[in-house]
Length: 92
Image 1 (cartoon, rainbow, N blue to C red):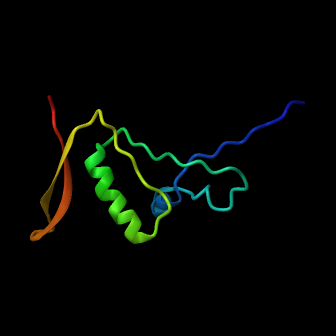
Image 2: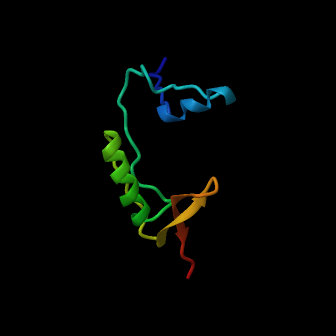
């Protein structure tokens, strides 16, 4: 018999979706944890803003946005009167 490797992929923060069947498979995993920090969904401007909030929250991870996705940050209405940060992709 050969060796068997086990890989788990997940995000403990997604455990909030337990009501949909999501499970936190990362907590208590006795193995090497690797974090993905570069996103291909948003650009550097949003990553910079997210990193400000991650630092405030004391989170150990920092994000890197993709240079291939030029974006602009702005504010959009949320729940009537409040404004929240929003990212808009610029199309060339």
